[in-house]
Length: 354
Image (cartoon, rainbow, N blue to C red; front, side):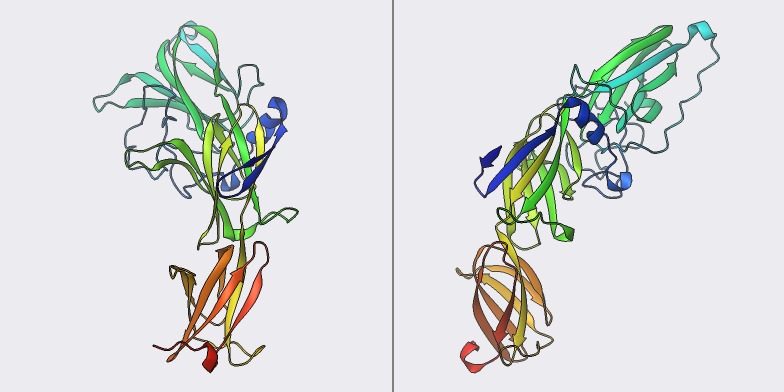
């Protein structure tokens, strides 16, 4: 499916139905960490907005946790599980086994990996928090509990929900429906061109609603191309960041429950490499300071060196080279997908005068 946006086009291919998508969506993110927040500690019990009225935070966790606002920690499919706290001495007939299963859709298969389970005591402590009783990473999980009430958090990537469960004695089975899917993002510079890769490209995902400052709520930041992002099923705004100057493309995308969608955005941009030379084809002059401006005179980016490279949105620019006491300029046209080496001549006719 191809859909136009205000800054380009995107093509969406729903590549897997519920059964196949479940396997791909359950893969671990690179490094097994928190997407969009490298090195951040997972916050047990943090819930996705709309999943319920409770915000279950263990002692020591608070709003200052280093996560994007309104984001649920990315759930690694492997990792050390929190050992379940030992039960007080009870007769075997008084113990209960709670068996939990997570699904993307009501009729979907159980998730076999990528799920985080956290069990919290029902009673609140003096500081308003609830005790974390147990934690498991993987797919389905069984918990041996004393009879009573508990809050069960189920997280899958950026999708999560918390449910209240009361257990008696014996076995109790519960199924959690996450109503979630996934996306895999890519970008190209034009039709029939290969996907962009490397460290120059990243994606940010925002919710449709805004925060208290009127800004779109960040859901997942600094996503690498090809990374599977697991999200609640709804509409999001995606920003493709190509380079660190002005090459940005935005598009609205729909995440479907139980589906993994490949989304490709078009970045109308190219990379130019600059050098200041005394003659055409000559050796680049070192210690040159560079400025790139729009035709309206707005500064886009700067750099220093003999061969600086810049990724710029398609359009016309004024490139200014500063070396010692001289300033030299050239008008450069950037064509999408056509990377180019650009020479600026350090000659009298290219020199700027005050």
